[in-house]
Amino acid sequence: MTDCTWPRLPALATGALCGLLLALLPTAPYAQAGSDLAVNISADSARMDERRGVGTYTGNVVVTRGDLTLWADRIIIHAPERRPIRMEAEGNPVRAESPDLDNQPRIATAQRMEYSFDDEVLLLLRDARVQTVTEDARGDRITYDLVRDVISIEGTSTDRVNITIQPRPE
Image (cartoon, rainbow, N blue to C red; front, top):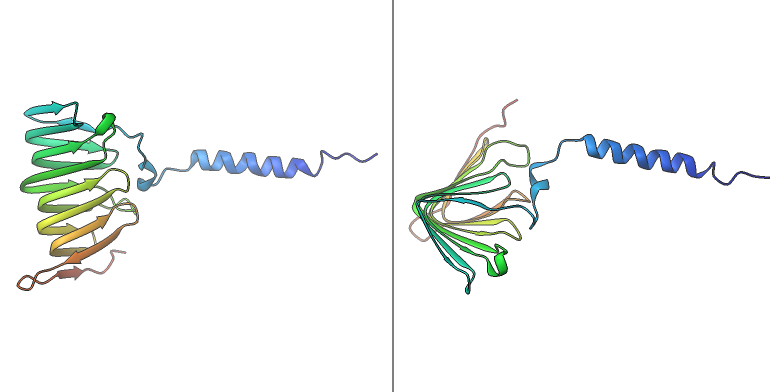
């Protein structure tokens, strides 16, 4: 009589070991993505329009979600049915900070920013700038995919795109 449980034991042990290793590994910065992350807002004043699902926050506004922190003079959050989908920020300038995929600092500044909660894309408008450990990018309009760490920069006919790339520190 053959024992048919023997061939399954290595597969079960391997699966359990993989699960244990995954549980012990530190999570990557982009692993925080998801609609289940809370949005925390601090401001001098707030106005909530529940019917339209729009909140307007003014005065020293700070918004945090996962590892993203954004500072602005005024922020409007569109959250129909209390589910944040889009944020518009204005300031002089608006500032956003979030670590890159290597957990290095990245700082974005602009006069206006828009953020999509679902795909984690930050749109910087007017005097846009993104700084990382190895890059300093400037333009009139920057689209920054925070999950994929992909940046697209547009200039104007009078204000060209400027990028400085530093050697990566060893």
